[in-house]
Amino acid sequence: MEFQNLLLKVGKALSKDEVKALVFLCTDLLEQKPNKVETASELFSCLMKQDRLSPENPQLLTELLVTIEHHALVRDLCLSPRTTTSLISPYRKLLYSLSEEITDDDLREVKFLLNTMIPRRKLGEHITTLEVFLEMERMDHLSESNLNTLETIVREVCPMLNAEINQFKRWRVTCPVMTTDAISTQENKEKESFTMPISPSTNTQDEGLGTYPMTSEKRGICLIVNNYDFSNSSQLNKRNGTEVDQKCLQSVFQWLGFEVENHHDCDANKMLSVFRTLSKRDHRQFDCVVCCVLSHGVEGSVYGVDGSTVKISDLTDPFNGLNCPSLVGKPKLFFIQACQGNREQQAVCIESDSSAYSFCWTDAIKAEEGIPHSADFLLGMATVPFYASFRERTNGSWFIQSLCQNLVQMVPRECDLMSILTKVNADVSQKSDRYGQRKQMPQPAFSLRKKVVFPVPNVPPPSIHKALSN
Image (cartoon, rainbow, N blue to C red; front, side, top):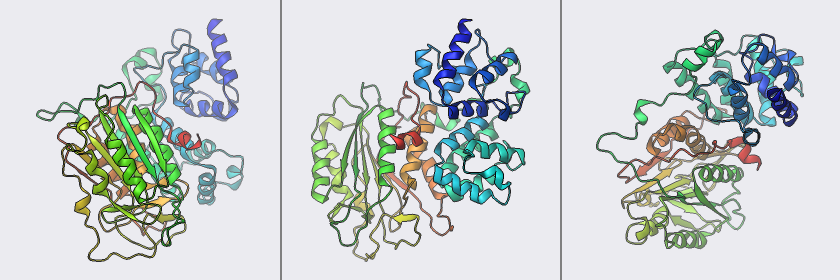
């Protein structure tokens, strides 16, 4: 009776959409069709009848609530979020994760692309993303082994999400495919696991290569300079979509244990002042420092909102060993979302982080001046010299969004930062605008002497989609 009361509390705490999400995640476990299960009580009753949920084995309930990020409910009900196995298939979790990232506007575009494949009555205004996925499965356009249509649609509507699909495909190649029968008994539940494996290449104990200490109570300061309003400049436009990047960076680095400081719409002098002030602080109680700049740029420099440029080297130099003794021997990480060349914007939905009316002269600032030569620096640039980087009005920039998503996905697997940035390179290089004409290639430069491996946080990773709504 006590367990039934617990399930009743869970049911009352869930919204209608959350119940639908739980049913969707249990699609492969239920003996009846998902559309026949409408309430939480019906779902729990079905799972108990099938011996998948019981007072002795509440693991599935915990996993469902953790997957939909109802962590407060897990805590209030004293359920243990730590499990050694996963009863929900990674395929279902992938589709659910994608549905959380797809906005209402994205969903309308998805339905438009599907209207020749799926009856229009199945694509009505009230139909949710998860219901669209179920209909695609029913009509054999989507399955665990057939993601082609889904990839094509995501590439057109929200290309940043293809990274999640690619990660799942890589995992599926390295792990045997599990059927629902394989977890039908408690014995198999204890033996089999759907958890993503850690690649051997992510081993942080490589012989002869150390790891920077990450033992402080607070990881360090994460400075974010977010330049949006360039109305005081005659040649630079507002950077619509940059607030998406700023919110994602703040959410992810707070999760990693950083104290985030935001500065908005800084002119050139203010940018220099902010960086120099940070470099003069006492960082002895911290493990490292992170600085992010979101702005327009030209080769080797970024713009202040007044239209004046600041050399990237002038932002990094205050943190070298001579100027900032409290960071000697500690990693200093810089991420720059800005163009390194000039290209006129051609697509309405894509904006270039460069001046639309400037040109690349032969005496332009050289990119090499922006690469820090002091020890323990990392400079993550959104693009290679001479080329533009791209930012979507509603989804943010390709580079920052890929960086945030890969940090969330790969830090829990104990991957080092350079491996993560290599994955960012791979993901961004696969992106293009909806016409397939514009491409981008990020470029990290570093003088690191050890691996940067962020400790796995004790709290669940943030949902990038939910971070934007906060």
